Image (cartoon, rainbow, N blue to C red; front, side, top):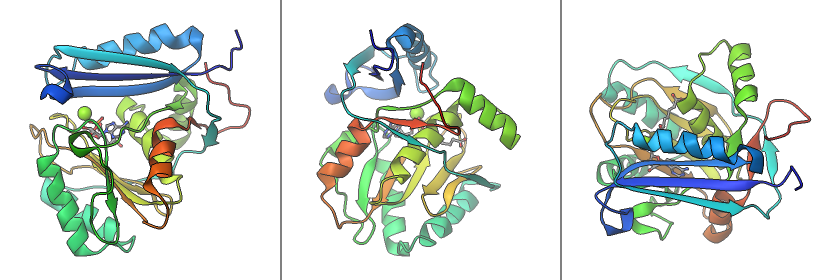
Length: 259
Ligand code: WAQ
Ligand code: MG
């Protein structure tokens, strides 16, 4: 076996049946892995789904695909943090951070209202930053970004250097945002979790980095999601292909090897 061969591992879990049959979305997750580490990554995903605060799944699906596409290595976006004392203040900060990217107030408002209606999506909604129109055709589910990884040891070393606590959730979110924002069509991403016990979210972009906002919703609230604001000057199909299929490894050093 060539130990540089990579596998994409994807998980989705729902309560009351599969998502497409109306089940409630509980959890999703993805890894890129060498064959030797697949078992441990699968166990992590089982643990993630079956200890979830949105509920205990009755449907759990795992998909493993061998990756044939060439990958890219990208440095993590720089991180900054904005403190908010409540959700309302957090959303005002999110507004102004999105407006810094030239997105109009009307479109931001429209997009934020979408969060109230998308609390069962497994993926992200892709929004035309000029018109506010939704560009993905995936209806309920949105587009799931896959084939991304940040090796644990490298992430922990990076946290130490930045004097930041090791936060698994931030690792996943920063990995995703770095992949999404590395594409030239992405103007900015807005995200907060759909987990009732996680209230920190972010606005991210290649231009401004990963801008965390400590409180974007109140505890107990199960609404959350992801919006990608994009330019409309290239076909959406190649953008979606990049998000779903092109492997991206986050690395802070040269000579990086995934295990
Ligand atoms: N691709 C596209 N959309 C996704 C993906 C993905 N791989 N994973 C999650 N989503 C969407 C989906 O609609 C989820 O319901 C929603 O995002 C929220 O996902 O402290 O934990 O995993 O810096 O609940 C951000 C702040 C935490 C971290 C975000 O999101 C920090 C979070 P969750
Ligand atoms: Mg979640």
